[in-house]
Amino acid sequence: MARYAALLRAVNVGVNKLAMADLRRVVTDLGHTDVKTYLQSGNVIFTSPPARAETLAEGIANRLADELGLRVPVLVRDGDELAAVAAASPYAGRQDDHTRVLVVFLSAAPAAARVRELAVPPGETMEYEVIGREAHLHFPAGGYGRTKFTAAYLEKKLGVVATARNLRSVLALRDLTAG
Image 1 (cartoon, one colour):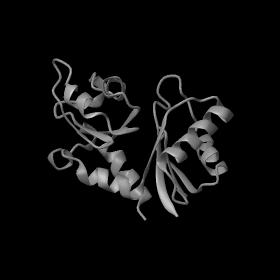
Image 2 (spheres, rainbow, N blue to C red):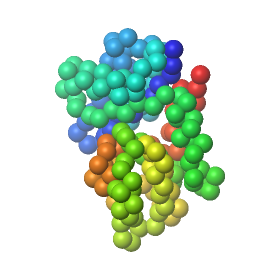
Image 3 (cartoon, rainbow, N blue to C red):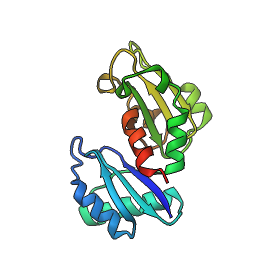
């Protein structure tokens, strides 16, 4: 058995309202066990036999659409992947405020040409690094709430689905999926 975290994009912000009890029920009904949610922003942790992350994500996304009419992208990472992401953060050790360090989870590693073309919007003070299927962001002078360098921006520029979590959440998800 393996521990996974499913990360839903744009849940409980704007129009995509989802009760965490409903999310837990949907994931449990798919046959996963030890299902827990973290915060109200579409993070669900579960145990399942080893499977491709894309297969798990598709199952959750389809069930949410079929049962609740909610069409949102779902990305899945296992515990080892989350531990590696947390360890790879180039900014974690440079910033005590973990809300100023974010990880944007990507549905696939973006094309190298798209990564080379990626740029910080004019007038913004931030740093980023794309490592595999994640973009690591650092906002030393402010938070994610005021930037144009968002998950939606990265989706457009990199051509992949993206969802962001601050480092505090990434560390919690890592701990919740540790085996």
